[in-house]
Image (tube, rainbow, N blue to C red; front, side, top):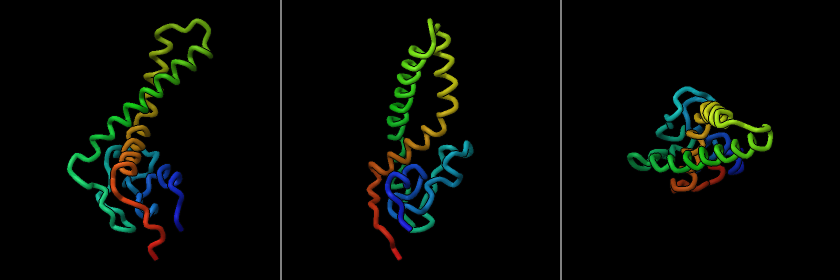
Length: 125
């Protein structure tokens, strides 16, 4: 059963078959954050096209952090009357600490889908 691209990205699935897992642990797990499987368990696609391939994902992770900073800044400004600098900093540090594992994983998923040259092949049965 094939998935749409959105469901495959959210689930951290293989770009080629959209069924195999990119990560050895569940997507929302805080263990082994940066570990990606070497190959797809379903279609045998290579998730490591070259050494240090995922180094470029740090730019996507940075964009996620900037978006989080801007969102928190706007939300605190609107929701809190006379916020202090410590309100901004505390909220940003706490949310960044909680969301960093997800941002790291999704940056790698988006990087592989965008630049990985693995194209969807549909049902291979």
